[in-house]
Image 1 (cartoon, rainbow over the protein chains, first blue to last red):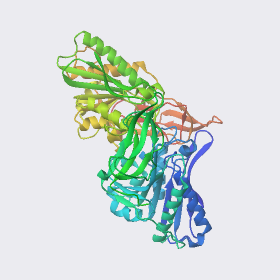
Image 2 (spheres, each protein chain N blue to C red):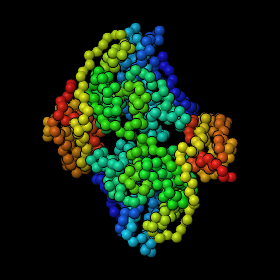
Image 3 (cartoon, each protein chain N blue to C red):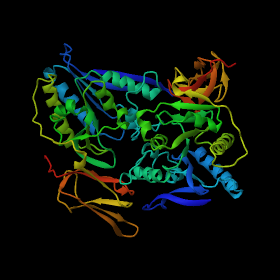
Image 4 (cartoon, helix red, strand yellow):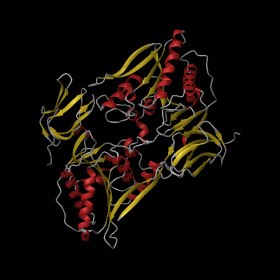
Length: 314
Length: 312
């Protein structure tokens, strides 16, 4: 059943609605609930496929559903509709206004109603797709404040990598932090790249979600095997590669590559002069879990991230 | 006056990206004034241009105190200004969410880091700031409550109001917040507008900055003495919201004194023209902020009022 989570009237003949699909057995189920949320950033579309696939699968196998599945495919409908990362008209990053405010302006009100609706779930997935610049292997990012509660779930979500990062005051305004701080376990998935859908990654995450639904007692149908991810809790394990000069980045390897120290990752070239401005090589042995997809770079642009001393789990 | 490049990046097809500073006098790093940080901050850039013009005159007359240096950075983001984009040209990130910056980080982190390195040691840090919502302000000084704030010093600008603001999580990466953490006495100067140039309010802001520099013994200046500032915390302000969406017809503007029950604005249906909401003031007070767009979304903070307790 499609439900409206929150709606507001717009000035010119339109109502903004944030909607979800609620899937339940006919008797209402056992009270356990998983929520799949995506589309906070309008240019991240990987979660669209996961929402579709999960909803389709459950509806075709509804007899195995024991609890509730809420699917929120578009928290930022304006952004998705207009290929805009933030909230158009406000130039605002939606993932910096949580937990919102029911007495606040339109966007704060929307945020507060979304949090109110998703709170109390046994588990929430917040699916992101990096951005339009970077491609990521399927991974879950966890604020160290919530590691004890979240890592056991994340380890069964069928991703390649769990990155436990340091606490940051800025990140306290995110959807996931707001829910985690309120006691609703929420996993942030990053995978693929902005403006595109990588179905193979979506299939992987779908299997992980069904597996966790089974574990939570929400699903009584087929289970899926999940892979064991690499877990990094040491920020010094992760190396950031930033552009030393402006130019056009030509990658030499794909994300997920296992690198030896000195391996060529890519070049920054200048098409005007026909010259190579820099060659980017791996500083250490490691696993390239992020690589730049968008070729135009300024000095400082992120080109990739390496997990040092590891090999792919794939 | 000495013009210097504080930070630069070489680009592929555009001219080099430069953050330029204009320094006056020599000696102790007394005061740094920063202007536009986003591509739509014309008023903030204009204020700095007028301040630079005035400081040049004062310097020529020997009015900068011996052993004091003032630095003005009129624009932190010329790239975005020149293409009329609010945030950074490639990735749309906001430089004023990147402080204190990081010299080995991403582009806007490097810009913030490069600028901060050049300006972090000043005694006083002033930023001509803008608000994210479209509207007009009564010029005021805003101070973040970080534990390092100095409200008495903020009164030296002579603005009618000093606003005390409790930082939210995303405020911790602004220039103002980080200046304070690095023990610079930091203040945000809000003038009436952002995209449009309001010469009268720019003049008031420049006079207030010069007034502040005089009272803190940085310059000699015989100008605007200013108001006795009233200190208000943002929690004390009354926010007025519209119940319906539609055309916004303001009947009261920033700076006006209003009475409880007075009609401040009407909302009219965008198709049929009938009034769907009449917005009345919930308190006696002064309008600090007034919405200034033709249309309003439902539940927008269209007015912010400083309630008056025993005036009138």
